[in-house]
Amino acid sequence: MQETENSSNLLTLKDYDLSLNSEKGPVQVLNKVNITLNAQETVGLVGESGCGKSMTALSMMGLLSNKIIAENQGELLWRGENLSNACNKRWRELRGKEMAMIFQEPMTALNPVLTIYEQLDEVLKEHSSLGNQDRRKKISDLLRQVGLRDVDSKLEWYPHQFSGGMRQRVMIAMALVCEPDLLIADEPTTALDVTTQAQILRLIKNLQRERKMALLFISHDLDVVGFLADRIVIMYAGEVVEDLLVEQLESPAHPYTIALQQARPRPGKSNFGFEPIPGTLPQPGSILIGCRFRDRCAKANKQCEINPPWQFQKNQHRVRCWHPKI
Image 1 (tube, rainbow, N blue to C red):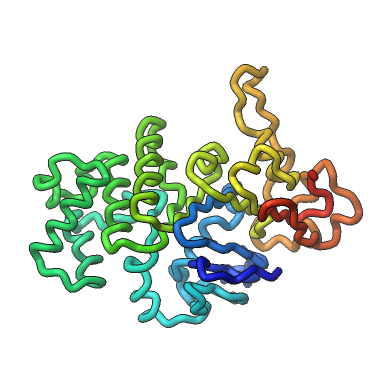
Image 2 (cartoon, rainbow, N blue to C red):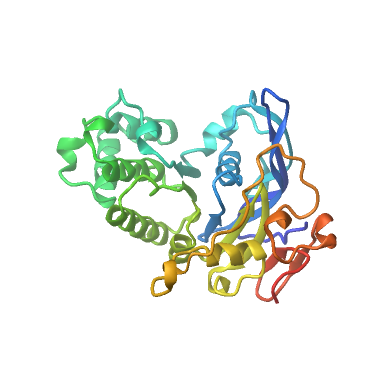
């Protein structure tokens, strides 16, 4: 599928395929993925666990080891530069400085034997020419900005001394310390309680606006991405199946997106309005022909045994389906 190139494109995946090594041979995890992130735009990437969201993010950041990649095809463009086969040196220049990532579980993402100051300072040393005092001031100011209290007394704390919510704030500070143009957040509130989750979401949204970054927010929760995003990309079984503006979320076109909407709890209705999606997500490595959702789709027919084309609807809305809702 052809994407329109323009000067606002920051990061683009074009027809991106990814297969990983396994004991049983190569396993395809991404198939012809097309995603474009524009400068200062917030995109929500949504789908069930195992659909390829995190693999997409790790590919964008160049964080997958060559040892586990069996094959990757297509293009990964950063400001027009193809990074598909970029060397480690080039990735080190970009990561932290121009693009950064917040991971799902901060306790495993942070180094348990280094203080938070040492970990943030390491990133600044790599990408800036600031002196010791200036780096310390910048780190302290940023930790205050993300909501840490009594920062001066906590710079020498280790990750285990913080609560889950505070650790995630440290991770956000680490991602932002070099003022990147793109922030990728991979389900950063999954391990947090509801109140802390809401605080972190508001913080990310405010920081994105203040710093004028592009944001890719990965989630399985349509309500969360509806709060944050300008545009939403829906993934299913390693493929992008729908790409729509957030205001179009109330009238999606793909049967899978419609099913996700109906599977959300709706207070006031019997059983909270739950309508579970029948069946299960195909396992990575399954031989999939035609529409990957057809075994779970009420609209499926013989035509769905053929790979569906992209269909373009109003206002940048595109859907990969033979029978989209119009």
